[in-house]
Length: 89
Picture 1 (cartoon, rainbow, N blue to C red):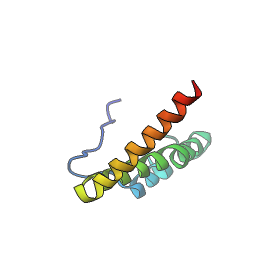
Picture 2: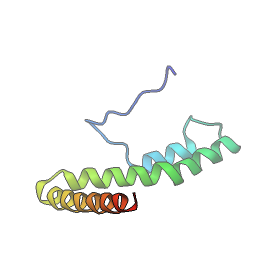
Picture 3: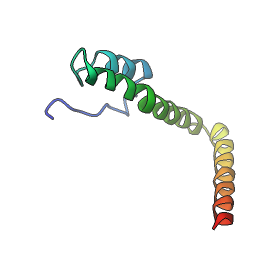
Picture 4: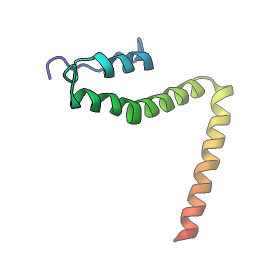
């Protein structure tokens, strides 16, 4: 674990292209074989959707005029889900 360091999120967020390049060519797995294929599919199915969603939320919440409507819709969605859940109990 000597070469594993988290990215500097204050200075530079790792972009999706950088994450995709790491999945295809990075040092996390051998160059060929099932481990590399697994790493690529992990990026496609898990990393890409979660990272894209998190970056979108970060962008939306950076400014009040974007953030307030997002928070209103998110609160409404949460309350709707809670109402459905409590109704099912």
